[in-house]
Amino acid sequence: MGRPPSNGGPSFRFMQNEVTEMDAILQEHNNTMPAREVLVSLAEKFSESPDRKGNIQVQMKQVWNWFQNRRYAIRAKSNKTPMKLNITPMPRDDLVAARGLSQQVAAPIPGAVPATTPASSAAGAGRATSENSYMEFEAKSARDGAWYDVGTFLSHRYLDKGEPEVLVRFAGFGPDEDEWLNVCRQVRQRSLPCEASECVAVLPGDLILCFQEGKDQALYFDAHVLDAQRRRHDVRGCRCRFLVRYDHDQSESPQSCVPQEIVPLRKICRRPETDYRLLQLHAANDLAANDQKETSVDPSTANAQRVAASALETTQQQQHNSDVAMAVLASQANVSQPVKTL
Image (tube, rainbow, N blue to C red):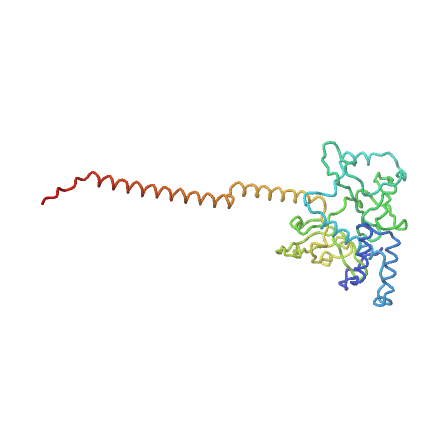
């Protein structure tokens, strides 16, 4: 693991033939992360290609990050209902109970707990959850400060100060990359990739997870949104741009030198805490649609009403003309005819 440079150097890019090969492998694995051996083999193969040999050494983590980013993008596109969330926060009661354990030394978790578990098994009383909802986590590596999906929680322990730690195996990595991480500061609910319609939920001041591409590798880092430039969407999706400031270099650089970048929505993963904004937006849109439906008249109904009114007006006019004609005839019948004389 290594932190990508922030010196403005050229970003690492996979070639089109490499992307095609990785796409095929991802489809074969049904959009799940391939085994570490597959990632290592791909990195070695790409490094030995004629275009890269002797120039660029492709790292396994670069391959891993490509798969992770593509899986995020596919998952965002497949989520057709924005209201349906695939992450459920851990109930406070369960969190308190977990922190209240009295064990002070490392204790293995029986069978190792996978990081993706049905949310219904952890949902508190009275909390409604979707049958397909899952609780997923990400963890911040102490080696490079980047965030990775958690594959398995292997063990847990408590430090002298009472702070809980967990032994994490990152998704797609082997035992050599396992780390002990602080539960409160380095483990959290997984960030959510943004759909094109969800750019409205990303606001200045927000904490986000941003995909930073460097010369040697590309990783996910914490960042804050400084500004949002809203643009009209088109067939390509969201065209908005966001000015972000990465957090991982702030301790090493003056505030004026903190790395900033303008990024598209596809590089941003929002925090689950912003879900309420989408819920409010959908509720407001539904209310406006209902109000418009109640106040507007169906076009076909309005046309029928206009035809009926016209027919009624014509009938009334015809009746009026008939009445006038009858009155004239009656008046003529009552007038005495003059007597003809010879």
